[in-house]
Length: 115
Length: 115
Image (tube, rainbow over all chains, first blue to last red; front, side, top):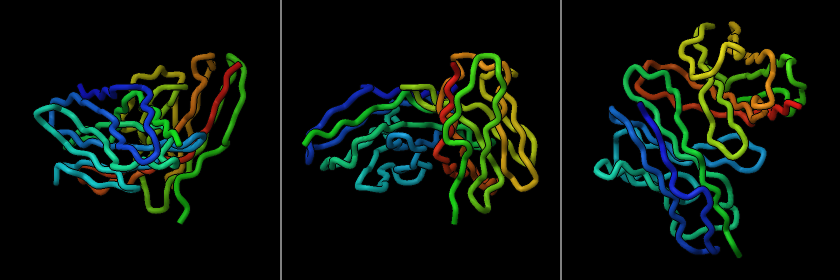
């Protein structure tokens, strides 16, 4: 069965500092992995996705993530945090072939950006 | 091009009542998935509809049911509401191209409060 674990329910960084949000996954088959962002009272917006192509994935708003199979990780990074990055971030996994696209989400990490 | 829309935005019900939530998929999409996001949690998959049939179901009781119409819009029905059903209900649509992964686009959600 697939699962996702996000380490750290709250992460606080200063504006301009590195952002690192951690995600580890468990999957019996090669997974597809995603990072979503959710702003208050809004739905989910896709930041980036890994679909078995390049292991370093670049997304929107300067975010990127690296798929590391040996570590079963898919951590999200951004070199320099902006105040507008403050939001809830979710890592998600889905199956491959034969999949209906059901997404399995982690518990989420709240990113706080301090001025 | 309108994205995924959901109605109503907010809803307040009392225990034991029934509720219907509605979703219109993104133009060109034929698949609708529903997720429940309890406060402080990641979204959980309820079920997915394709070609007017429930294609996959998550670990939710039969009180949760749905429907997909010929125009691909969808409804989520919850009977005998419990306090624990209070959550943000997210609809996601995608286009089933028969590929290994079909990106899901999320709506803004319906906030259901059960008193």
